[in-house]
Every structure is written in structure tokens, then in C-alpha cells.
Image (cartoon, rainbow, N blue to C red; front, side, top):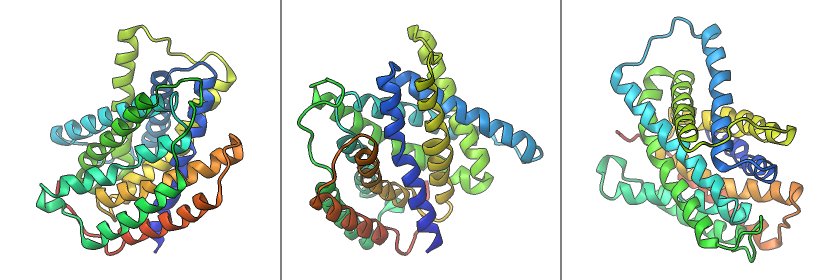
Length: 293
């Protein structure tokens, strides 16, 4: 029971990310800037830790480095697309759409026998999906003055798609080399990718006020170092599809935090949906099975 609780704790940390994104966006940062600095700060902290606590750990071979670099690129653009969605749609709606990765994992499993989910996975996912519908309802206006909801929806869905290859590519390497080495390479690759993009398009990169630094520092510490690192650690105990299914809890946590800090109310149906969603995710995490990728 401990492993699911740790995974759920990681989802809670990731759920806090939307609040820091909103702080950064309202302070004048772009999604590219926010993503770049989130990953850069996380990479620097992990790099310092690795120097002092893993100086003699075995290196990665070329194939592993290639897998993790590609995983990092997927993660980088996951952040850019998801953060862009928060300029157009509410926290609750954005986190709902970016958390539908298990649907894509299940569809992929229909074509890849080694990844085929169990019956309990589908039952739990159906229960969780019903809870999600109750928790997050379509917004009636854009949170930052934008009205093109379809742009926000599309960006959030693109972010959900990009999470799946990120998890699949890192799973086997994480099992062999451990969480710290795996996420250090992934986060660093993602940061380098976004630095190249930012410099290529002439994007101003350095945060210029305290609110911006609060946003990127909060994202680097909580959703990145805690949340996504827990996701990678959980791949030692759950499949990528199961870890993805746990992210369906993110809309619940994000909605609660948005209620507290952004004055977005939570009504009775949303509270009921949260309980149903939690039950569904716990069902998907029953009897962990392994997948080969």
C-alpha cells in the first residue's frame, strides 16, 4: 500500500504546478520561459546532488542516453504545450485534458500485446473517468482574457500525448540505473532542448522580477523535483500505463488548490467526483504488472 501512496503524493506535488504557472504567466513570462527555467533549475540541483552522492556510479551507454534524450525532448514539449493551454482555459479543464494519458496508453496497448492492460485497469479507468467528469466542467470564459478555448484544449491534449513516450522511454533505463541518474539526464536533455529553441527564436530567457523567480523556483522544487521524480521512481513498481493513470488525480488536487489560492469554487458534484476518481485510480493500481518496452 506504501507504493500507491508515494505515487499519489507525487501527483499532489505535480498538481501544484498549475498555480506556479499561473503566477509566472500573470507576471509576464511565456510558457517557453517557464518550462526552460523549471527544467534548468531542477537539472542544476540534481547535478549538484549527483556530484556529491553518486560520484562513482556507472555511466549510461549510448542506447540509454539516446532513449533518455528523446524522453527529455518529449517532456520539454509536454510542459510548453500544457503551460500554453493555461493561457486559454481554466486550471481544472487544463489539468483534466492533460491527464488523459491513460486513454492513449490503453489504445496503444491494443496494438502492443506486451503493454495490454488488465481488466482491472480498464474498470478503474472507467470509474476514474466518471469522477473526472464531475470534478472538471467546461469553463465559460478564459482565465487570462483569451477566448479561443479550442487552442487551450488542443495544447492540453498534446501535452497528454507527450507524457506517454516520456514514461515508456525512461522505464527500462530507470530500472537499470536508478531514478536519480535517469531523471538527471532527462531533465538536463529537456532543458538543453528548450535553451536551443529559446535562443533560436530570440526569446528573452532571464526572469526579471521576484514573481517570475517564485514561479520557476516553485515549479522546479515541487512538481519537477518531487512530482516527476516520484513518477520515475514509481516505474520500478508500476507500469507506465499505471503511473499515467495515477495522473488522473491531478485535476482533483489542482481544483482544490485553485479553490484555495485562485478562488475557484468546488461544488458538491466536484467533491463527489474527487472521491470517485480516487477510488478508480486505486483500482487501476491493483496487482501491478510489468510491460516490456
